[in-house]
Amino acid sequence: MAVIRADNISVGYGKVTVAGGITFEVQSGEILTLIGPNGAGKSTVLKSIAAQLPLLSGTAYIGERSISAITEREISRELSLVLTERIHAERMTCRDVVATGRYPYTGRLGILSAEDNRAVDEAMGLTGVSALSGRDFRFISDGQRQCVMLARAIAQQPKVMLLDEPTSFLDIGHKLELLTLLRKLAREKNIAVVQSLHELDLAQRFSDRILCISDKKADRIGAPEEIFTDGYIDRLYGINSGTFDSLSGTAEPLMMKGEPQVFVIGGGGKGIAVYRSLWRKGIPFAAGVIPENDIEYPTAKALAAALVSERAYEMISEESVERAMEVMEKCGEVICCVERIGAMNEKIKKLIEKANKKIK
Image 1: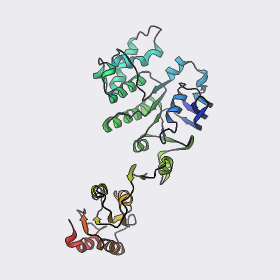
Image 2: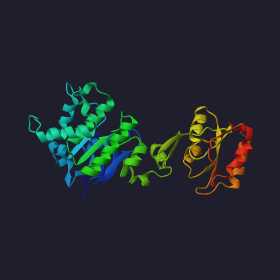
Image 3: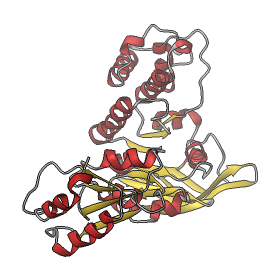
């Protein structure tokens, strides 16, 4: 049975619908990630599911109970919410802030029991903020503040965690730590996680399913391999200043147009840095011969003004080398990035020999 689900909900402010037609369910131990362009309504969906905003239509459930029929205190025991909005915590230490996650379980005076204190300590340990325990919450960095708020949510010991852009303000190391922790919590503590992310590469790697929101509606939902298909992300985000490669999870700018001035003999990833350097300098270039399954093929395809490629898993053919030579002859300079000649690219030797004194 789903721990949390939404049945054709519409969300927004007042009578203004931000997003509608949203249906999903999340099982224990599963991570559902919301993606979509800015303003699509991802944050509004999370706040509405958490009962911070009233639903405009449809019903959201925790288990079999409608969230609208559950008291605020009951919701707090079932569900925790982490937002990117700044929390005003006057004269509170970081531990004080984390301890507020236990208030759904304490009496009216908010006095923590030994069990509550253990939950607070464990949550701070899991998120790596134990050393901040006595620090004033107002005077820590945005990244540290985000981790403290995550610790607060974990201390609630919820069945469901809702997180709005939890990786905001974090460096890449801490982004990976946080998402790995969420994956661990989902797997080991059977917590259902619903989050929004802007980092598509991380959404692709850490999510069980992905819900795409665009044009005021749920556009698509499915496993990452169903969502990250050729061209779909470009359409979802309306990308017209570049391309998104679904296999590598990377975005590339538009190619430099014009007659190629430099020919790059690449392969095995060795040419990527050269492609990017030439693009930054505004120099149109050609590349070849690059197999379609080579790690640098997506970058070469996106940035090169001309590309000579070979079919995946095929040895570089005589025909491909001849095409590359024709393009190379028109370039004023050649850069060779190939360090090793093997059986699959043996005919590249002919291209290198032809390049002769042009090679830098």
